[in-house]
Length: 435
Image (cartoon, rainbow, N blue to C red; front, side, top):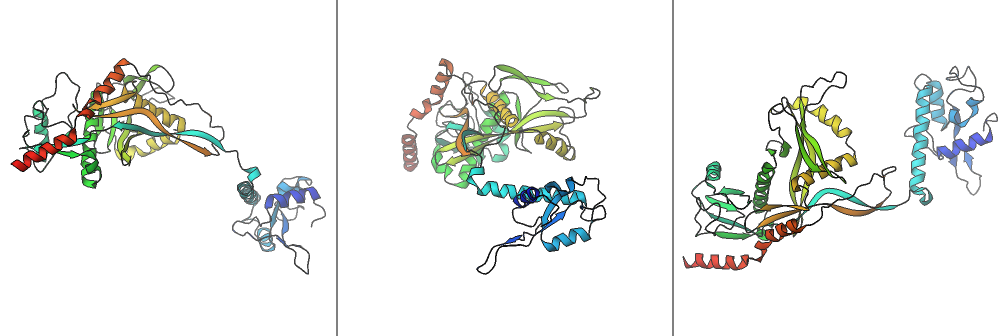
């Protein structure tokens, strides 16, 4: 050991080095354990980052004589790497060796912290909120009926649909092989599709049966998605089929748009959903527009359980209507996402769920005798983990109070569950057999 280095500094150096050579990738142990015949052997060497003399390697670096003998200026190496750093002093400069020492000691600290129960952070129990909301009710049956139109003529069918004047019903459908599929009870004479189908030859398909087959499940989700398109359109939200996301559009070209909503843990507020950013230095408008957007996707995560995921995004346009070219979007969105931490991301999710529900405990996709009911409370899981230091921002998974009107709407949405769909299926099959 070097006699001019204080014993305390040597002890600190060996403790921080973890008995390993600090040279990247080396890992040579610097103290050999004792044997039956011999005592332990110290094979490591103490190297100076700034040499202890002005004539030594890196010795002309400005550092006091006293500080040259302290552990921040010392690095523990095997004999081979000690020789290398002193012979290649231009490659292994003071800055390089200081970083090497800091990286090695940080690695040793992390390793000790992971291995020692006493150094592990305390385990906390907390709720982790997802970006998912529960779908509590879904149509139990999909109906199909003969249709004189093909799937390429769906636009014509839309023009012939008779919308109920006294009910806020959604009319999603699709046509395959000259049969129309819908959630509506197509055997009812006043169903919205009565003008384009044969109501006397209706076939029901149980939802659970469709979910078990990939192609039929995709068709079921298609009906849900088309219902969501129609529902969001009533709220002034457009669907972008190319990127499969929903977005706000201005009420007039070149004008900003503001909407009212119930914010996270607060009362009703207003928020810009379409706006043209301005330069901070001059206040001049930039040459693009921001639009709030989100991906809304239905997922089945258990045999009888579904959810809706909400993933906030952004849409960029040139003039509030025409999309910005892809090459001009990437960097802008990347910079935005880099600044959007968990609390900001959840705030975006909450905005979308609250705007879709209009501040109510749920929103309902109404198909006449059947409905899809989406509850707005974010699905959460309780976890035990080390947590994130300083991440103590409060969040209440706020759910709006049930009142007489929202309760009545839920009961009406569930009224169709009282219909004996299985009995209808039996009757329909019987009629087909008689024919």
